[in-house]
Length: 108
Image 1 (cartoon, rainbow, N blue to C red):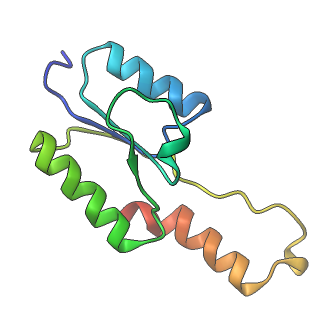
Image 2: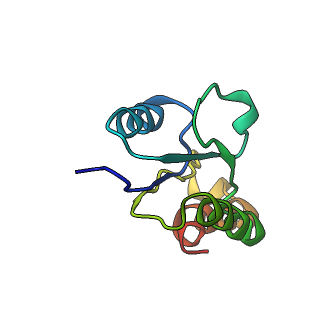
């Protein structure tokens, strides 16, 4: 079923995200994991730097996958941002970063 299907997984460097990456790879998916710091991961497959807040980073990431695999069949978007604290103590800058990373980042 997965033969040849190419998977793109954001924030694939730890936790459940890493487990999803490893599961898909074990099922035969060519997997391209993404992380803002892929050099600190120990993924043996397609770990690429990606910052969803940066349009150039997103374009480079997609171009790298397209050059290597020719297409993307599966997307698991795990990019997100947790901002904890009282709303009245949250600055506009913090709220903007949270909004961009969580909402618009995946659509860049």
